[in-house]
Length: 355
Image 1 (cartoon, rainbow, N blue to C red):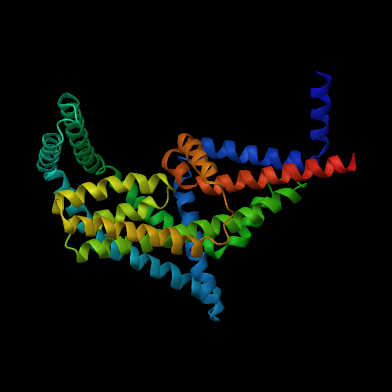
Image 2 (image 1 turned 135 degrees about the vertical axis):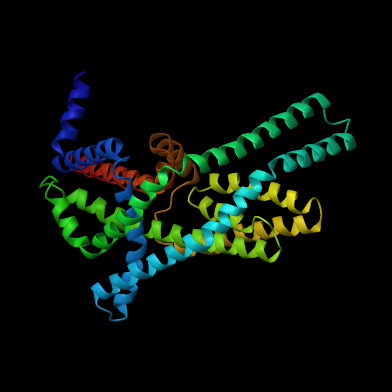
């Protein structure tokens, strides 16, 4: 017991470290409690990080800041309106087509598996195969029902979506316009001993900004490349697969593994076994290879390197806490934990050297 008390006194003697950990704990608890309410603000902050890079680029061209902000936000709203009027109807039509053809695709999958069992009867247990077919059919029907249910249930949410469509652009504009004033105002609620907290914030601000901007452009480029590839090949669900592939980059490792299943299945339903399907899957693999070896190193050169195990653990932990929002912000939160742990170890080593 005396050893624990001595250790506790040693830690409490480091006032700056105590203030840092206490402040982070309070912020974390507030997010846990208020994240449903603050969802529009958090989304606006993410968009502001993306657009802030464009604003800074325009400022380097000697354009006044207010004019640069107005041009950036206005252009973003026009692009959003264009997407809502052109992309969303096409995407909705493809989802509807997928749902309506789901029974046909289930039967096609069943026939394919039965053909595999016939050709390799000595390797495959027919009873087990029937169970697999039944499970796949039930799962595909469940997914189709979920899509229909989502489309129907989302009708009341259109009012909320319209409110967000008004609130988020306004929040983004003022976040860009009054960024420094907002930060100065928030600092009033922090403890006076905040040297370490400011150091963590400086590192995290850079990392989050680079991460969100990088992920946005990575998702856009990868999704666009996937859509163009499959559109040129005449795939009926080219836009849907492009959107799914673009969204998958927000979830490292897991996203690619999950989206590969619909890519392969829809390619099989579209073309069947043959050269065209092979070319389609090859195009998908080429896009993923270019993303992993060219786009990611270029966009994320300034992001703190994290081990794949640390990334997966962060996805599991923060995903269980905050759902899809936690999955998306898992890497920035892991970078925050890494920064804090580095400071703790640094202070501990400095204290050991003094002792």
